[in-house]
Length: 79
Image 1: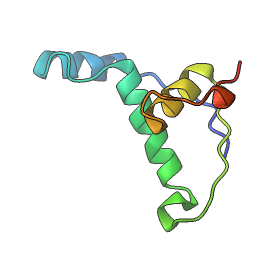
Image 2 (image 1 turned 120 degrees about the horizontal axis):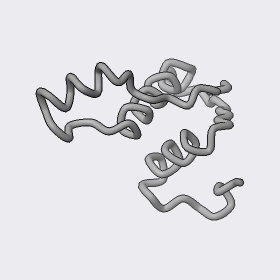
Image 3 (image 1 turned 120 degrees about the vertical axis):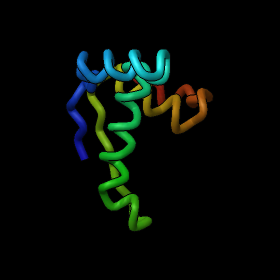
Image 4 (image 1 turned 135 degrees about the horizontal axis):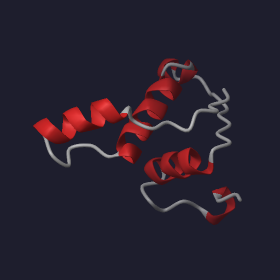
């Protein structure tokens, strides 16, 4: 799977969230949940292996920090 999108929340959605629940969501939270959802919809949900390429440094860092709970092994930190 190749995920080439550097996800950002729609400004209108961000205004709505901040109006109704201030501080409830950030651009990074939104981007990460979208990425996890896309990855989950691959073979992962069927407990099959999947290879993921994420060229965006921001998105890759968000995903790896989530996956490794902030303890990303040095050999996974690229560029």
